[in-house]
Length: 198
Image 1 (tube, one colour):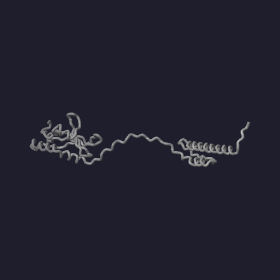
Image 2 (tube, one colour; image 1 turned 30 degrees about the vertical axis):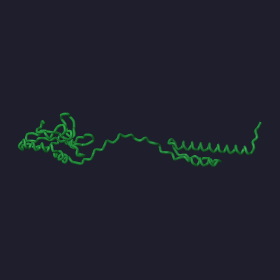
Image 3 (cartoon, helix red, strand yellow; image 1 turned 90 degrees about the horizontal axis):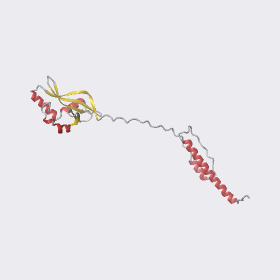
Image 4 (spheres, one colour; image 1 turned 180 degrees about the horizontal axis):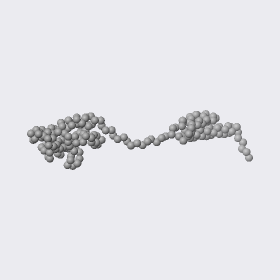
């Protein structure tokens, strides 16, 4: 037994079918747009959406224009971090030597050597390695303070003089370490020194 529908009911069913058809068309169009916009698509394809009877379906379809295909994403190269840049020299080797000889301890030692030797020996600097020493990312000139006479040059102390700032370090041969001037003065008492072996 067939069911009879009034023209009003048929009109409602037709409207529902059109709305469902419009929504389905929009969903398919969006799905195709996403698929073609993905990096795996080799070329861009334009999808034409059929005109939907419903106004809202038409607006949704026009808003779903496919985006241009994105360029394939390359993984960034992983590189080791660059080593820290070495500070630029602000003083030459000669300026470093002059700063070292200006230390009050070396001034006192020079006067003492002159006095004790009757002017036959002098205090001075000897560069014991012409290549700068690298320490904690900085370069240091390497000098020894020596008692210099006609017969020999006797080392009193060895120093590292920074080429990039005013730092001066002392090589502690007893403990085989490099120490600051402040620690050297505090622990070794160089102002009281009167001979090579003090």
